[in-house]
Image (cartoon, rainbow, N blue to C red):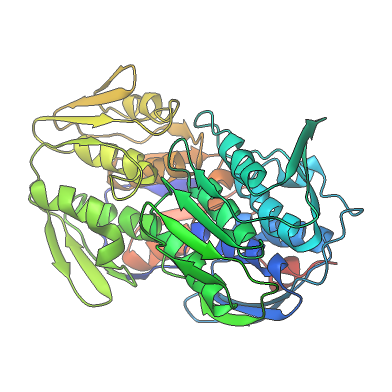
Length: 437
């Protein structure tokens, strides 16, 4: 198992290129099951979750071929869905690390009339049931069975329907929206998730011939088609990665230019940082963050356009370096403060009151051995190591590799002293690993 070793308190200067959004690439990969025609995806981040989804598609009969890797690290991937083969069942060992594996359920069901998918895994940040995915597919006429840890769905052909999600769910919205593109008639989905990744998926589906209106709003309407065709689509930049590096730029005497950051997708974070007095320069396709004196702030996580839970840990670290009391209320996941004890071990003063974390003023951090518990907590602890005195070792970096491409290389380019150590020091993905055997 490998880890990061960080020699802290090095000034960060320069630019960092943001990769394609992992949370947009995964549903886009799943959407290729909706057609036999080839689909070209550009700007796919070579992270561990992409490799897992690629292997899953390979088990189902798809071909996945990496055609090009740009200097920024994005992959151009050609996929051909073929006809999903449900006799080649994806084992639990393959999908247990990634919740997004359930996203193949909707498109495969719509295309073939049946699908069997293992219940997914992922980060241990709280209960994230797939009941809304299944309820939406049942509303479209699917017969759903749960047995032995698998979801089995069947339908001769799905039929358009009206369905309201009990609460906004990104994966549920994506799964049901994909299924509805091949359903008979019109589907109206209400109380949908509004994240930019939903909009990006809808753009791909429209390019494939789907008719979708309202993506990015609470109500989405889909007019079903008999079939979809191939398309060429570029994945949007990763707003969570961009937000992580913006926060890194605000910690200490730093100046970081975040290339590819889209201000429109980052408004919930940018509004809070502006209220704290952050020195930000917003350009057309980049944002510059400079270290500055910040004031305290209170934030509450919420579905988009609220403050993103995936930036909660990084924002909380920023709060430990502010004079005054900062409060972070976690309202999305009930178990997403596992990084707090690790930060306190490094010298932070954070009090937990149920689902609220409270910082009590600026505290100098000192290097320590810490353990990552989930993807975003990993990034938080790496940023903490950058500003801590001495050496910090962040263990279980495999969490980080699920969503951040070559983070140590990007930080090194900015002037950080960070190295990957351990038995497996290879970052990202080999091209051959993306193509199924």
